[in-house]
Image (cartoon, rainbow over all chains, first blue to last red; front, side, top):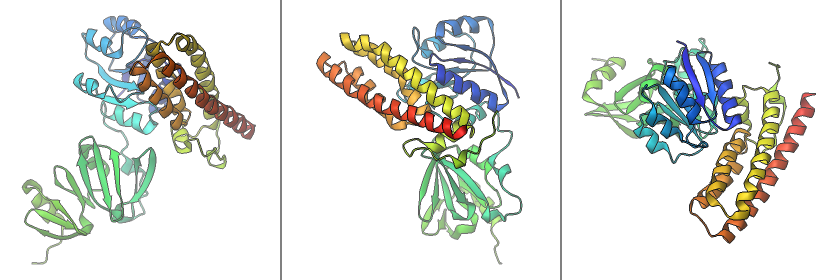
Length: 236
Length: 130
């Protein structure tokens, strides 16, 4: 799917990096770059685009002023060096909010909210490894951290973030449960609750509505209980 | 695009190497260019900020430094971006003129240290790439 987009950004380097990211992604057709909201507003009155990359603070009207005057509703990804506008952005129902400087990976995550990823991370896993030896990379504090699937005890949802819990450490990364479920190996990981995915190999015991994972108690919802029972081998 | 082997070049520790390589797709030539561009744009914005510092216009200073802030980040110097953020927040509190001038002078000194780092790293990287 080709996404048509414009950039509204007064800072030349920020615009150049965004242009390079769009080119690198291969699925964004950049129509224009505007250094202010007025010029962008005029363009959007007579042109339809799928996506607007929008800075907030620019000379003249702000990015939010531009959104106020739009009759069409394209996807909007805000790009700003401040987190202070995040709540306002949320109220404008923007698709995502990129805080400068952002990585290409974070940019891709924002784009994938508009179009599903063509190649999930799982595709990069070498086929010859057994599922538990599979490496996955998560972005944590600006770094890519390698985890073996066998190290992960469970994954917990925290709104726009998820927490990977291992025996010794916890890693928080920007992701959603829905997206994560499409990327992790279903032979190893099983969703047991709206907010929890467990490593089925780490399950010690299972009683009532809780799964015990190496000393951690994880809630299991009624709707997921059967799924878990189907995934473990029970001797009758 | 030139093919480079980014992992043989040792960035100075102050630069966020992983971030730079990820953003610029391991292209050291692009990173060298970013160092130069960031330095030029930051210098330019600092020049433009001076008249506002002279008259104690905190809001115009805040706006100028808001433009400078991401340049440090994209050049892999996140610490300098944080410095600018602190100054921006300070300007937002509409400080007294003498406090503003003092804080501005301190920030400019800090910016000069960062600009020197950018220049040195750009020179070192370009020498490596020759």
